[in-house]
Length: 433
Image (cartoon, rainbow, N blue to C red; front, side):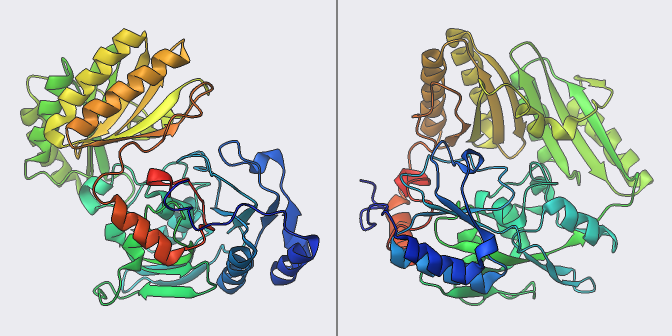
């Protein structure tokens, strides 16, 4: 039994009368029987509830905790396959009806938004005032604010503007005891108290369910004010050299990544935003830093490369890795070497910060498993991490997270403090939390 679930009861055969109590909380028309499409990593829930607001959601969560019902929060459902399979699951708590923009104070460059709002719709609303949340997650048209925060999913813009933990300034979290906990606020400098926004970000919904969040905003670049350069590198070492040279320069780039594959030369993409004169000057400097790499025409869809990795057959595994920037070339060499052993096809997109994603395909699941484990061992030896984001048939039992590290005892204590009965996403997070 995992450390996080040791105090949790077995998933019960909850009496119909108990479910009637949940119907009374959310409304009978908003509690339905789950279908196979509602399964999480192959585990089938019984019911799906859609509360109308944070108060209803907190009450439903308290009911579930007292009844011993295991819960998985769900937003747009774009990342339900991330993490380990839940050890038990009875109820999906959907944020589909929490879909409003609460407050946009454009003069203060802040916004408060409910958890069920898709990121794409929010960005369109902010763009009317030439503002944005400076993040570019996967599938923005479907991915919701709560899900993006819970999975800590951000893309290339984090290089310039920081990760989600740098952009979120307040959160409201429904806890298993029925509390609606609030921390932070819409004032950017408000840092007093317990840092609940950062704690909830990336917790995979294991501590509480995000009902709304407040963000700091940044100006959106005027249309047509951006430019991307793509350099053809000779090898992974050359690509890493360009990444480090640009990153260590005074350039104000808003994107910097390398794309590598088993069947072609590496590419390095750099993006600039601003005035035409400023972009021209920065582009000229970037060309000098990248020399003697050949500059190619900017590839269409270069900044969608991370999302394109997912547009493949279900037989492909997806992994996310994090290493020191100085170890990018060595990590890519490990992927190449292990890929050759396994007869594997692979593609990598890695940012200059050392955060990367890889699609891995092999004819034999056992060869693919061995390659992933070898890659994980090498990355962890370099003080990095490797997480399996999608497991193809034959690899369902492969542990998603790898070594939990020295912080694991603290993580267990935090989980027990917030969710002592193991109600939320049991078994899905690091170390079986």
